[in-house]
Length: 316
Image (cartoon, rainbow, N blue to C red; front, top):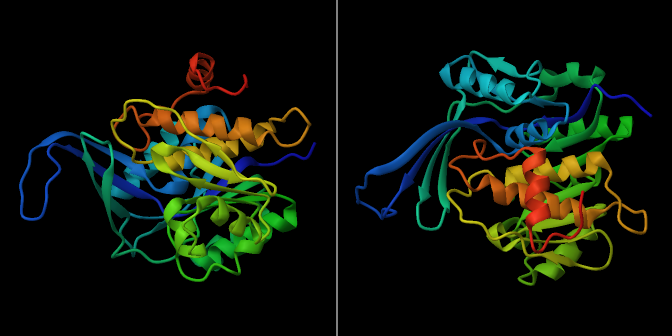
């Protein structure tokens, strides 16, 4: 078996999240008191890496932070989860990203405002040192396109697989798509890219690009996915939600963890049903707590939850 330095390498933006739960959720020119607050590391890919690390995988994260308070907290929290941060880029000429997140107490849904006004994109020359780092999977968020393409090409050369997380369209990604194996996107992205309101048709349209599997996440309504000519629907799990922040990011991390474990279906192919179920359970359990990281479950918690779940497909 081929040896890798890491099970997965993640590359993308990283931010420090400032979260508040509000009730009632304010309109314009209104004032309300905060019911609860938290400061946690955020960002789609780093939260996915934190998820994988907590589940037991060996992972590393690459991203840019400033030489400031937020950067220090971002780095220390990833270390707390067990994510390798040796490849973080610390740039004294930028300010670390900050995300201000307001959560509606009644629905668990949130509004996010990202402050990236003093950040610079990562260029391929800044991460050229990664040419000697090996990984089985590469997880990207589509930002800093040139750097994404550089890493994705390395992955293809090394025989590694690439997972792309897209919440919204970010310029022209046509050059990146042929390098991606698994596309896991939001409902908004699927509609904006395909202009198809029927999600099954949108899923199939995205699959035509050449991905091994396409997943469209639907928040608390589950997801649709396909790895063939058939579109499948998983309804997700119904739990009381405190906050949906980071649920999709946790889904991605758990999805890659399932790929890493190479769970099989009854016919011996990749057990995508099991992987989708597992990722959905992780995302649902995360929503029990405020923020993208606090509620990330352990592997045992997920297994126990699935054993108790009425719509569990099969044991992992």
